[in-house]
Image (cartoon, rainbow, N blue to C red; front, side, top):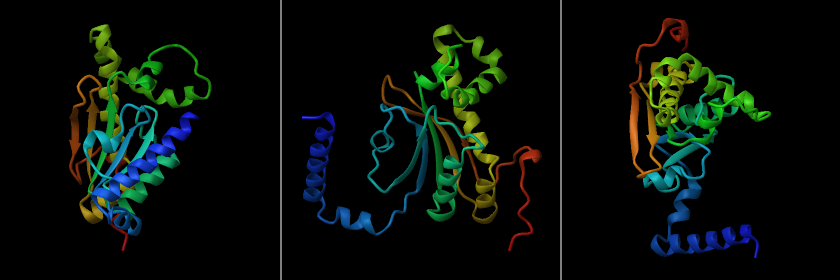
Amino acid sequence: MRESDKLLMANKAWARERVAVDPNFFGRLKDQQRPGFLWIGCSDSRVPANEITGTAPGEVFVHRNIANLVVPTDLNLLSVVQYAVDVLEVEHVIVCGHDNCGGIKAAMTPRSYGPLNKWLRNIKDTYHANRAEIEAAPPQERITRLSQISIREQVHNLTKTSVIQRSWYLHDRPWLHGWSYSLNDGILHELISVAPRMPIDPIYQFDFSGEP
């Protein structure tokens, strides 16, 4: 039996179990999705959003990429954010990273990873801008320190987007959060929380006063 066949069999068992517990489970899901949260997480297979937050399908809208980055030129990410904020009307956007992140570790080395280098450059830039703080930490703690700094940076990157600022201006939502997940004990830790309309540097501020 192929490994992929095992996944299909497990899926059938999961679906049967769901219906046994709640016969209308899939009936509710197929009609609409109204999640309260957008989760921007790392692609790492050890950090499944629904499982570690104890949420059911339909409660969290999820986007994942290597090292949970918010890159201003990433149209995939920006499209997800716009859909979640403007259409799904989520109340919270969570950027969640984790310790021992492979993307963070890769960015801290001189090794070339081919096309991935362009993505890792974003992490390297964060390292460069915060080198003194990171290198002041003991060597065994520097990966975690860069990961935590990067999580905060991604939340700040969200505040600079017109999608978030416009929603703040019109609707006073969403809240933005930066969380770190510990692989050692499975606990989430909040590193930063940004309320709607939080002041930002004027150079990044958009003017929506002329909109209807």
